[in-house]
Image (cartoon, rainbow, N blue to C red):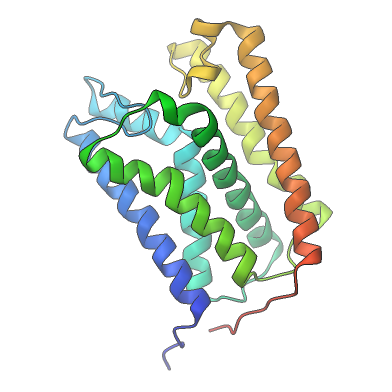
Length: 220
């Protein structure tokens, strides 16, 4: 028997399609030697471009959002310890992505054509839809102290990976983390600002999860 197309399923299906379309379009462009919408630049090697592409916090956040959205299409009432961490980590990552891009990176990039659409999917539509989908459709409550603690594991791992890989290959995904350009003190200071933002957002998400009305959409 086919599961009904509930509002939660429809919302998360649209979100998943937006993210998937942006990811596929960007990968196709990179394979063809096109520009990366995250940086506005292209490299000589498609392999290098793809490795850099998946190294962006933005892209990894969108991948987490995609997985969570697909899981909610299949079962809007999904739960489980691992799933709770996955959903909150994706929500945290994509919210940080939207806020940092809008405040710091957007003025540095000027997209046109397909790049504009890819950028909009990654940095505007995905963050807004992910947050609204969580706030409106839940499922809720799902955020406890243990879940919030585990949700910071991936961002910390990403910072370590980025700084270590950058020291080895001389490439950093974002200007404010570029040690070669700004030096370690400023790069670490900027990283600290983002970490504080993430911790504040986690506190807000946990507070909202307990304050907003419980929501358990109909499952499959």
